[in-house]
Image (tube, rainbow, N blue to C red):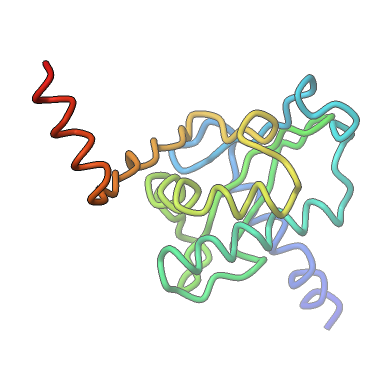
Amino acid sequence: MLEKIFLIICLPSALTAQLCIPNAPAACQVQLRNKPAGHRANAWNEGEKVLFQTTMAFVMRQHLKQEFSLSNILVCNETAPVSLWFVVTSPLDPTLLVDKEDVAAAVRKFRHRINCVFLLTDLTLEFVDLYPTLAEPAKLRLTRRSRKQTRVKNSRG
């Protein structure tokens, strides 16, 4: 009985150690930049780490339309003030990792939501090598007046 309890307690951390390896193909790195963050550049406590995992589970759930949970976001190699690596496991099989491309697409799609949770910006909370995509160019809405002004300018030139 005691062996079973020990196995249940140790299995998740052993699984994390095997799956969450820095610089692995599916691993992503997050850093909090000190200068732009100022006073918020302190090391994250356990609660903030759980908040990060929960936020990433939400982002993955929204993007891939699967039931991700806190246990699917494995965090490793934490260093002060804030630098960590994470991987995302499949909700169907926790021994399989989600591709980094899928994680990157989810982060890009919901980057604003992630930043808002931590009250940070792209300048302070950096997903290393996961670059934000450029927003669509704003569409100009032409009104009668703007069309008329355009015609007048064109007729003068």
